[in-house]
Length: 289
Image: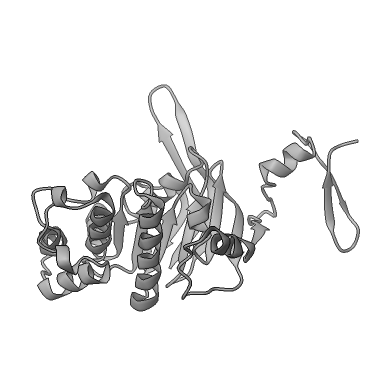
């Protein structure tokens, strides 16, 4: 579904040049629900904006389905954003038109593409648990309800890819869990590919795969070995069990380079150079003698 190979994004001004993505490699399968985590400035939001067609890559390769986002024309980009991808922002003001009802917000997206389907719009609001709020306006909805309307809006044109930028960042933990439950249900029932950017590792552990980005490159992956779709992940104990199911892998790029987690390097007091040995079975990295 998504293929990034040596993806580079450089922001330039008259005085400064910032490399946000430095040859990032990433593959996401169709129908997958996964999370991208990273510290502020790591490049995760830049990646999401590129995948959403909101920003242009500088170099490398990035493909979403049949679309090549490096070579896409402006007219094709409009078509891509309307038909292939749905976007959910953390800030509800960017998701909703406050003077419209929940139903009218969903229908507006459809009308912009010339494909109004009121029955499907109501079905989407029912799927996110808002069948009783379809005629409510923004000021009549809680923050969690507004975010659920935003999810329905993002699916209005039946996109194959759903991108969510910190979708639970402005709601309480109980509402966040409900939103994640909705994502899992939509992923399972509609088959839509879902990519979530978050800084909250407890939420990231509720998906099947987590990709960590550091300094504009993929650094590691967490893969869940046993998936319990029926679990609601409501207790701290259940959250810990979920975390235990994730196994961490360091990601190698095409040149065989890897990013060792910062905590490991600090624990060994490694900086700049390291000693490496191979004993026939294991590769060992140590601080230089």
